[in-house]
Image (tube, rainbow, N blue to C red):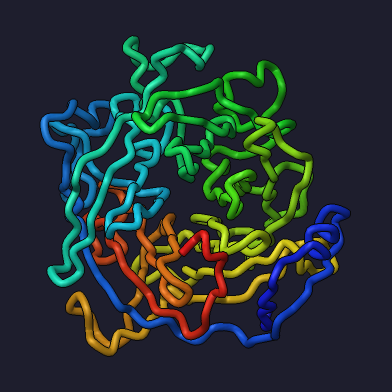
Length: 399
């Protein structure tokens, strides 16, 4: 995990991948990246709500958490678990299932928000958004709401990709399912199951025992440069697999089915988890790996480059450290922080490539539960940009 292989894919590489071989055609070897530099900081206050929306938090305990008591008159803008860029300085970000589990999130509406970070003012503007719905009844089991607006008790959405036609592919953890929505947020087809994998909340498993723990489904999902393939990555290990190994499955968008190709991402420690996975090109990915700590207990908050055409003896994708989020240079002391900036949040679930040497990273603030920045104070949603010490050599279609 100490060398990086910059690969220019070609016909030979495609052929090698097709037969499952690791036959990289390398341009050059490079050491791991050095400490990234903070180039932008913006923050959205924890107590930000969708104007004139519906009440939320009624299923939570009314005792204050980090000084904030439920319920609320509106929907919180929180829990960012996926991001896509619009190319004009704005971004679409997806809130996850709400307040942590199926039982307490029935009044949290699943939503994609449009954000605009304003870095020179250290703030984030919320420009609007769309709710996720199933008006045509593609979901065959009972939903929480009769109007078929989807809630955090229906799906635990954690990853998102936007297709060239403007539709959205979203990864869920309750199935785990792949979900397809049009540009208005309306579901376009029935949820797609991952063959042979069942979370406890899966409504289709019947008497089949679950082989994936709760909240361990599709936490990350990459899209191939041509948009023809999706690569959803599980957050947890499937029962029977080696502890700490996570399945990355290939899904053919045109065929509407999984291809049967599967790759393995190996965590540094089985107790860690992934936060996001996006593609750099046709065979490399950026993957957030984290421990469960926050604040003073946060130690592992890292972004790796993982290469499915360069694998170790056990078949796991080779990893190269791209950015240590607990050791970021901040020479301009952006955000009012010192010359070393840390991102000490429990869950960090969003990464997007801005250019070959710049990425943006967002946290999931688990409103109001996480307090990684200041003990006893609910975390804001922070939006940071980082300059890397090397080029990602990304596919131009991602730039």
